[in-house]
Image: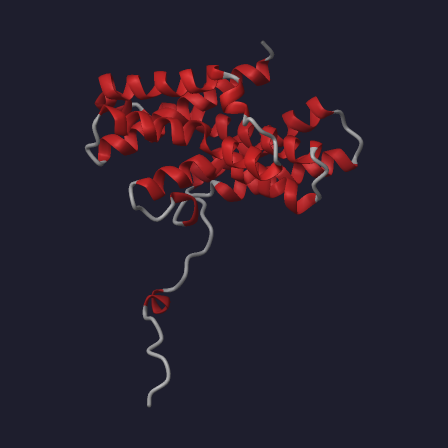
Length: 212
């Protein structure tokens, strides 16, 4: 197993834990914990593969990933409160997983002949799609469009991968550089509290429409 494969599995495990913790917040049962853990851990990759027409999707071809997600759900179900108190440490692995997922997603988009925008979308979708599915299942506004410099870091990582491709770098180098940039941006945002500008409070007032 290569280091990239190991980081991919570690990222899947941490993403699954994040999904399980969201289930714990909503006081879901064991099945609910497992559903959110699997959705968060492999949901983005499954959506990516379906959009690319790469079926059966990778998460089903290799049951290792589903097993890792289930293991993450079990950890949360048995020791959720302790995991939640250690989340600052877990978030470090989460940031690394974000970079690896973005790089792998972008590389797969590149392998299917996508252009720069398509590669960036595949990078962001792979890294954040599972979280979106998780939030929709519990009827929350997806976190990636509500707060945190998360999806933006993945998009920029995908862009970096495409630039490396144009520069003629090998696939492994492309993945490492894209993962490093994505994770680095995420770490910087975490430590500095960086985020994108928000819509002003005036935007909360919906227009009343024309009067008769």
